[in-house]
Image 1 (tube, rainbow, N blue to C red):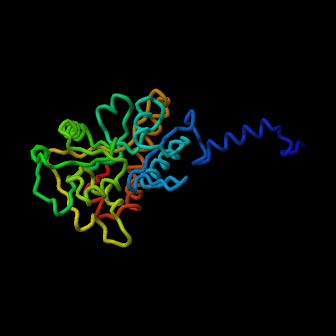
Image 2 (image 1 turned 45 degrees about the vertical axis):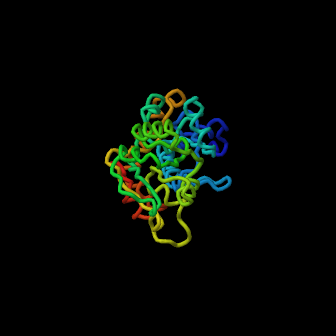
Image 3 (image 1 turned 120 degrees about the vertical axis):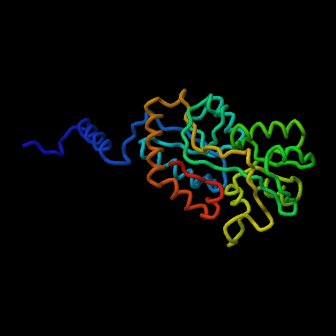
Length: 276
């Protein structure tokens, strides 16, 4: 009788390949590993040396495992990442807010909605209800993170402020915080939960520091946040796998658990709405 150990190397390789397809988490149906470079984004993308973590990093990793897609993460400066996206040099852009400009370039997969607010230092606080009122305060200057977008209405406002010479673009959220506190800018427009991490010190209570406030503006809508998939780089069947895996991971609570692990519920209640 033939010894099973005497199976040829070719047969053993075929058996191992079959097992890989049958064992969850081992399959890799995507045609190739997908490139998803990232820039620091509050507690959603945290970069410390060679380590990349964060609420939405963990969520995308979960989606990739479910879809059987390999994922390559690396850190890049935000302006370079934005240029590479439009130059078709990346497969996945995340976390990304939805805009009409990006929609023309790639396919969007929504995960949740974020509501930007008017954020100011308390000694600067004055009741503002709309973007129109904000524009009428001609002495008020803004500070925003370069390449951040909270939808088309936000982008149009920034263009108006830029033409008026009333806006400063900076590299990160910590600089936004510092400029507001020092009085070098009057306001920013952001979901407060993103600014929370740059302001958090030690064991302070959840929320923005007491000397900061935030207000809703009636004409600044919430924006969808998720990922953009480049159809010129990713096969259609792989895009569909990622869409299905994303929808499943949102429905079964994986996204909510990832967010809750990093953000206090008090902050998520202010501006975050996971899609059904």
